[in-house]
Length: 389
Image 1 (spheres, rainbow, N blue to C red):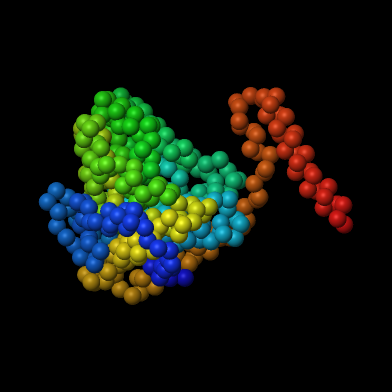
Image 2: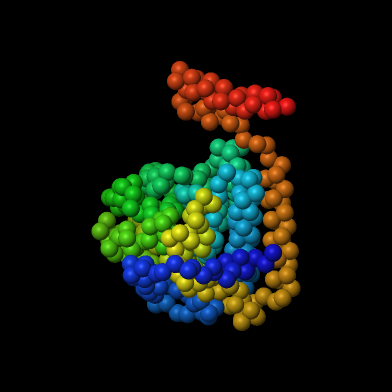
């Protein structure tokens, strides 16, 4: 399986007539935003007046490796879900640069509050990929110790983790530590009240937190321009702290901007909103069909900005990686895919009755009644099988 080509498949052409509103929406997303960029889609370094980064060849190859392996893991997880091994999967396809760039900007003592799609950040924090898949299979309730990696458990409730991050950051400030906190969320979550509240509290209390918004253009089927009248990063101004928009498909720019925001937080200068302007190449989750609301031309335009191909082009142009390096990495990615696949298939099936165990801290009569009803329902299938023999 060619990893770099995962996001570059030829798009399916739509036979549907394009509506005027859809054309307008596509045009809005196609417009080049004012953003921080250090590596353009052609794989060329570009200058920015405020941000720059100086990385060694080894560090550049490391970023490329992170993105390739993260994409390979993500592709394997998607396949496993399609084969019935996982209940659900939220792909990060296309967002590797935003996650790896920001993830590698963090120090070990910084704390991360993710959503449910930050598999690349989890990789950077040292979380075993199989632990992520155990959660999506339903055999664990988180899969890792947050204190071991300073990486909180995945949050399904949209936007709530920004409040957790703000409170944690306020505590960090009271402790007198120079650690920083980062909260990940998407463009859809930016419309949630929890996010607005976290912006307010973090600004008032000068909390050392970075709000990292991955604007992948779609909140399931709702395009960003139908959620906001201004670019998302500009919202920070109304709360009294700076915002910056970065090319979310440029891993170098994401690293530089996030590192700068984290250092600002460490200096006691408060929160920063980073809007990573990127694109969700796949479905919202494996239960979603984006062809029902998204145009093929739009996806094709973003394929040309693929973050992995962009960095590979730069490495090849500058002579920083040879064919042997890419071949070895391809072998490593296949090994990772095999390890993940075997680990998931070795996991037990989820216990159906476990859903009742932690509804309340103590026992509850209504939960006991529901448990008994569900057990009887499950048993009815066994009785039916017996009658058919």
